[in-house]
Length: 298
Image (cartoon, rainbow, N blue to C red; front, side, top):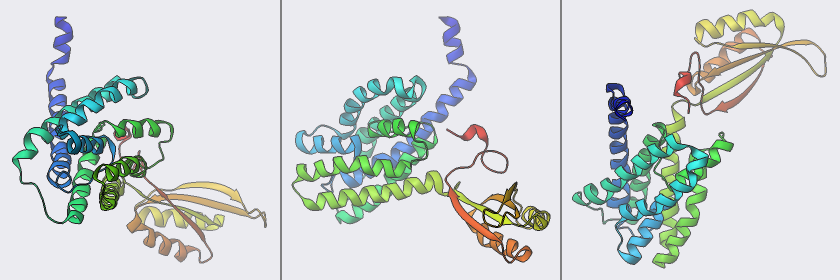
């Protein structure tokens, strides 16, 4: 028993737990202010478990944070097998911090009681920042997030924001029924749209980019690779190919670059081959040499 406690409370572990706690507090402050100080007085329900908690608060005066915590307990228990103990332990810690921030800290701050549209916009932005912080640190706010994470385990290419918006829609409609106000539904969807944009931008916007698929003749390969490496400072992967109609030998060059580098890449390859064919697609994340470290992927 003593050795277990010693391993649990090593200096590195304490540093790790403290870092996670600090990140949870920061994320929960954004999340809590958005929910308590903007949404709660605006008479509309956002999506997810937090939306159910606001509906319960409106109907039965149950504290928003406490309601969120109670709803999350059975969801975490059910999701245990699919998502694993470690992730759910992190999520449970985040849920506890979130509960305390919403019910104990946010009431100390002024509540916005002005224009409902502004409340929806600012709440969506704040909550989007909070959720991005949770996700980036390998945690979540629980509730519908756990359902979304389960879906992403099977379909990792799907956007977190788009999944969140789809699931939130059901809760937003229930909120409209609870408040008896069609405007509550519209403000709820406005909130979710802003939250989606902010969260996706923070999670993907700064690491996403473009993949250029360059099809050219073999004699241009060396010069194109040189220009991409020296003038664009990017790497490239070369494949040998053959034209389907002409049966001529071709070279296919794959080059991943940022959005801002793409126009420059177009210009460079046209300098070498005016008849070049360039196909462009997008990527959300890139890990490895020249991009994010492999161990930062989740």
